[in-house]
Structures are given as C-alpha cells and as structure tokens.
Length: 183
Image 1 (cartoon, rainbow, N blue to C red):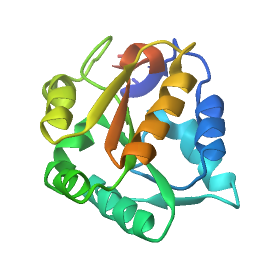
Image 2 (cartoon, rainbow, N blue to C red):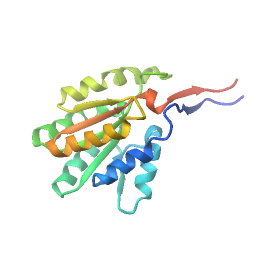
Image 3 (cartoon, one colour):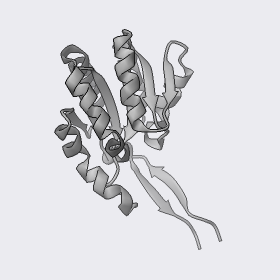
Image 4 (cartoon, rainbow, N blue to C red):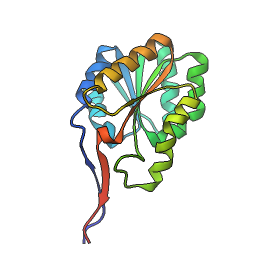
C-alpha cells in the first residue's frame, strides 16, 4: 500500500522564465515568498540570481512590511504567495494603501478549477474581493500567452501610481494539484 501523493497536473506550460525576465527588466531586486509549488520556478530563479535577493517569509504580512521598507530604501520588490495567504496579510495591506507604498503581489490561486482540497475553496473564492476591499488593484491572468504582458503592466501600474497591485495566477493557468494514492 502506498500513501497519498500531491502533484501538479500542469496545463499552463513553463511561464516562470518569462515572468522572471519581466520583473528583472523592471528593476525588481527583492523577491519575498512563502514556499509554494506554483511559484517554484520563479523562486528558484530568484535564488539563483546573484543580483536578486530572495527572502523566505514565515508569514505573508512580513512580505508587506519588507516591501514597504525596501521601497523607502529605493528598492523594488515583488511578493509571491498563494491565495490562502491573502487572509494572513489583510491588516498589513492597509499600510500600503494609506502610505502609498507600491507592491506587486503574484498570487497563485487555489480553490478553483480542478481543486481537490475543500479547505482551499473559501479563501480562494474570497481572494479577489478581500484584496479589492483593502484597496489593492486586482488583475487576473488565465492565459499563458498574455501572462508576461499582464505582469509587466501590473508592475508599471504599481510603481508608477504608488499602489498595491495583485496579479491572480489562475489555477487553470498553473495546473491543478491532485491528491491521491493507491490502496
């Protein structure tokens, strides 16, 4: 008998290199993240780049504070998180809007297309509304053909208007996680 396994059914292809190229070209030098399988390629690229600082967070709200401090020091940042982490940083998001700190959040979505875990559904469904309620501009990206342009536009929007912006990377774009095993 084998135990349960979690894997990705990848339908979106490799998108992380193009997104990494965009954030690098836009002068981002700090990437903060909670480890997440959906962001794995981006995290690995940031960690491998000697000109990029990749910081593992213990909780998402730390990423908001680091982004604010980085901006005050003249550094652009991007925060990578899963939709389940949006709820963890709601209070800190008010700092960004009130103080006009820019930040781009790349949010891998859960609780939608092909989801196996019922615990992911409530926050996944609430994520866009929660972000909007906190003054975050939300862009949804479902198409690998437009993803790089979506991220490029969102970065320009965030850093030109001193606004928090989130790009929601759909589960259909990333591929769904499956959970199963053999008895």
